[in-house]
Length: 409
Image (cartoon, rainbow, N blue to C red; front, top):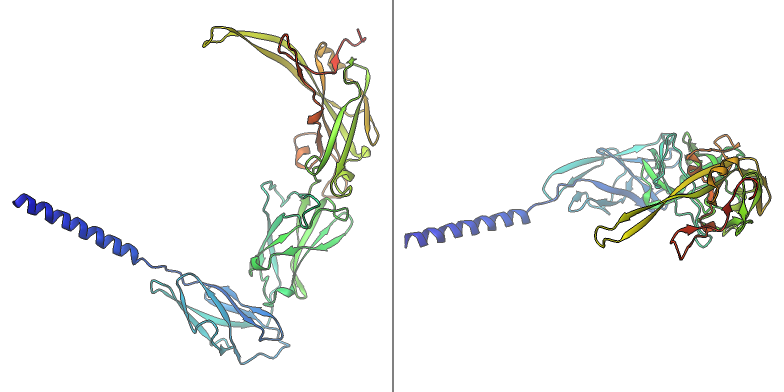
């Protein structure tokens, strides 16, 4: 009997503990005392929205000294979740440095804010440009991105970081400008009004067109008649393969060729933006033709441990050849096959890629021969030029342009 009573007592205590724990959990409250936004609408100096800047325990309103200040304002205030404010949002208060607000969090914590009126506007400061793309490089370089013609904008964003973007309290006074340096062409950038704070904003690059160009560009923020210092970014060339059609193949397909022989590659590029992309891939700007060769070195034979049968694996020798001595037209590139192909007699010839020049930060057409060529959009790959066909007898892969000895035998 005593044991049963002890068990019942223990269970009651556990239940009481669990009940108390749950009650405590339910009574947890939020500690937020933040003012998310503070603005006066349709009341001051004919502006649709005069926005306050929240900085520490201050609500800063930048006021034009040439305009008469009102005696009272009726601000609209948005708070963090669970918080309350006194005086409440929508209440008329004195437009004065003596006006104070108290925000009370859900857990009872409080924070006092003071209204601050400034008549001398600070010059906007642009400290950094952060791209929304993954490809970020030193010296604030980023990539220009091209979109299909069906999209009205590029959908490529830059985040501008700095200070004093809202010193007039009016978004209509905020402008963001961009200028390419090699010819001085200037245009403005659209920004998301909801993203603008006193220290940051998100701008969007326009859709790529024939008026826009690659190379180094300068960006700055202007608020009213005051503008920030500028920051530079580099815009690389667009990718013709992603936003157009690329085709290319050897004119000697199905033939046997040899080192020293002149061969040709027939090619064609089109894009969806009225030539805005293909203008970067002109014959005069072609720098390097890369072709590759493949030869079957051996066939390794092993025994499948599961079936006990022989299985075969082709082992190939591959090499890429960089050719800079060629003749290029709008649809064809001709060149001599290099002597190094002697080591690939009996193998096959394949197209690799074309490497083009690009506009560098000084507005000069230049080139990169290493992996950086991909970074600047220089390379066109001819993936669709490889025509493999398995041999029904051996299962080996062959391609249609075959390499023979240098004398053609």
